[in-house]
Length: 346
Image (cartoon, rainbow, N blue to C red; front, side, top):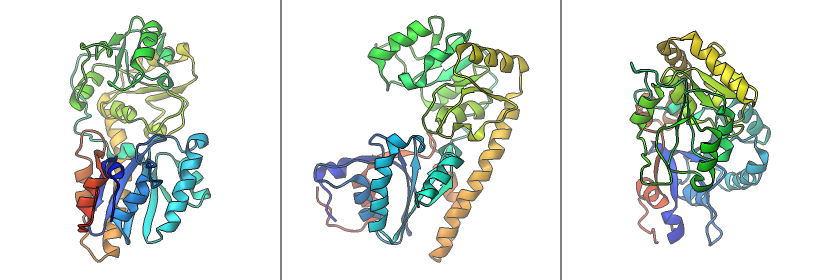
């Protein structure tokens, strides 16, 4: 097989499920995560299909709401054509919400409910005996669609945010929206900024009583499962993307896009003093049901090829990472891993 230099260097976020047979799970958003059209007219998934070869399996996990049809319609058309040209590769979407499974099924795609938060590392995200310094915390990158302004009436608010976002333009606006908030990472536009590792994120979440989810549309929102596994009740706006799959009305409030409604819900949940370990246990009970179906899926593929069942081992491997099951590397790496073809040129 021949990969262009551009294609060989293209990075994917993925989890390797199996080699013999080749089974790969990739993440895909509406940008170039998981998908890119190269200068020669080929695309990243076409190259990936050639690397995997016949009698392989490719699972695609959307990281943005599939019901946001404007963003996904052209992408799904491209994928549909690709799937038809590779009939000996089994494709399946791992969807974050039931409505996405139904939507893709109506378009003729194979899809199952397998929210990416199922693969969160529950050992890093855990309940700790910590002082509760904040009434609520919002773990969200600094971009407008995270709608920080909706937290304007929440008192004693902590904020966490990555170094990725619209820092020069949006950070000053957040400072204006939320002048009394505690910016835990520091100023992201200066050298004072501190990027937290996943353990530090969990430690800071445990300093709060409630977690906030304020976007209208995104994917399953990894921060939402971090909140729950750390034992935080959640105040959320209505949303598309699948973050509510693990919500429970006993300790999760879904309210209007209104700062006062959000503040009132935070105060109500804070006053209930729900045991964090109870929230975590209820969440893990739900997660484990999905994980069991994932193990069954892997084992069924193994049986189909006359191989030893090892779904539990695969699950343990891909849930041991810091951020769900995802690692990051290039198409060149995947070619070297899956193929013995020595004709790769760059």
